[in-house]
Image 1 (cartoon, rainbow, N blue to C red):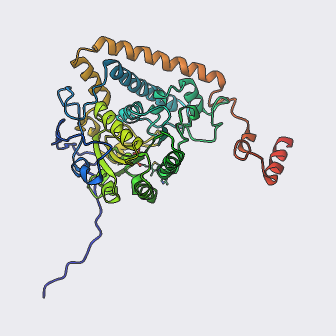
Image 2 (spheres, rainbow, N blue to C red):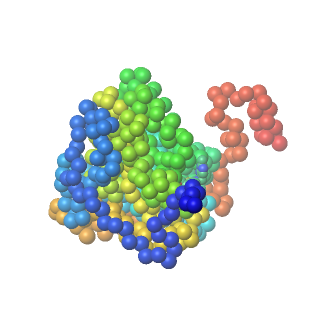
Image 3 (cartoon, rainbow, N blue to C red):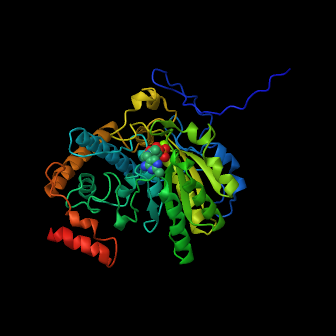
Length: 410
Ligand SMILES: Cc1ncc(C[n+]2csc(CCOP(=O)(O)OP(=O)(O)O)c2C)c(N)n1
Ligand SMILES: [Mg+2]
């Protein structure tokens, strides 16, 4: 009798675990492989290759080429580099502050600096940003003052959200940077709703949002894709595949497949892009913006990158992944790649890089000193506790007013 094979539960795995030597296959995709379709006419089916391939502009030799080359000026490239260096140094300093007890918690964007910076630079200032905690860099592009960001991270009296959020869960109204929510994924469908509202009002406003590989396994992701597709909402939906969701590998969310192609059955133009390639990411986002603004609808983008640091200050990645993974990532480091490109085209030098890093380090330290004038973590002053009652209702309901009065009185 033939033994019938019992169905078994498929449990995905991570490619490397502690003690393994990471050895990623080198990428088969080269700059120039994929054409740039007309953003206004392109339908989902025209992007099948884009959803399974990888849009790249910067080759391994630091040279930019292909249809997607956005032909940015040297000044624009230097601006992008400066924002990325600013974010990396800011993150390093803030992480040290956390380790020395000056911040309660911190999350770095290490290895992913390009994502929010290149993508926000490709937008217009009236566009709405619905970020996760991994896109604080968008605020630098939108001109947020670093002192104000540090005051938020400390939770002192100048914290613009008055201690109501965890550090790094910024909110920046002037920059149309919507408050980051701790429950992951909620921003994805909210972004589609705002995009629908802009379209309904006839405004030239596009919304951009990001979700992590891990959070894309939640229902919120699918609701967002469905609505974005049906209403042709002017929204740019990014899945940042940085390989990890804390200790859970991205394979647990896709079963080892790509994320980009998931937009195709929803009828969304879908593209996978090298998330450490400033030029490719800028170009794809610009393309998606042009498409959204013309009424052609939403774009679904997988941003392929690698979370080089720990998930947060509470995480120790040596417990679940091999130590050398990020140094072996085929996409390299986004800052090094843009710096090398600028040097390659004769618009930058090692000395200028050193000077930039020194200047920004001074800027960050100066901002920290300024911020603690409004209170430090150990001694305050902190936002007054009655702010739990304010700024939620236009008029405080009677039952809260009773408690509020009791608190002030007591
Ligand atoms: C709804 C919800 N579930 C779980 C968590 C705990 N949590 C915070 S971040 C995170 C991992 C998210 O990973 P991913 O979406 O890949 O984003 P990344 O941190 O890699 O940018 C988890 C599970 C949460 N904050 N909210
Ligand atoms: Mg992730």
